[in-house]
Image (tube, rainbow, N blue to C red; front, top):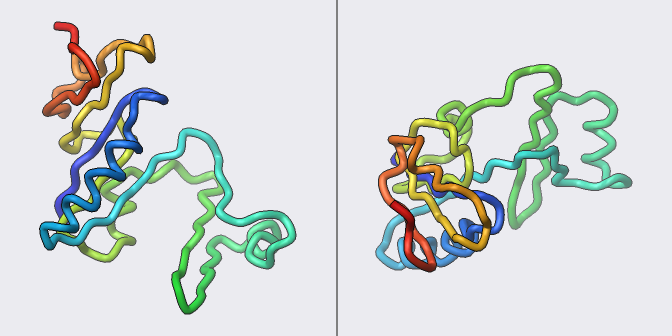
Length: 140
């Protein structure tokens, strides 16, 4: 499965660009999936939901399924955080996997950069960034 990443600091426009790229790529007849890195903990479910109670009780994995979709939640507990390569093994193969985040990983990436964030270019320090997309001039 081919993978390509979009990286940048918070507020740079990564998600905005990603959700515009997806229909363009799908419109060309390719299948696309996405992977999103969350820097902080997150919950797919909420207190009071059965799946939440299963996780709180100690289940290592909880799979929630309906006629429309399914989601698998895996608790890392004390394990290290898996990288994109490992996570990809759990996904159905597609023509292109777009990865938002995981900026320290070695897959090919596009940096989304905006001067308004006040942050430096990541591309200066990361050879796996192949191009920079910006809403204005990019500093040398």
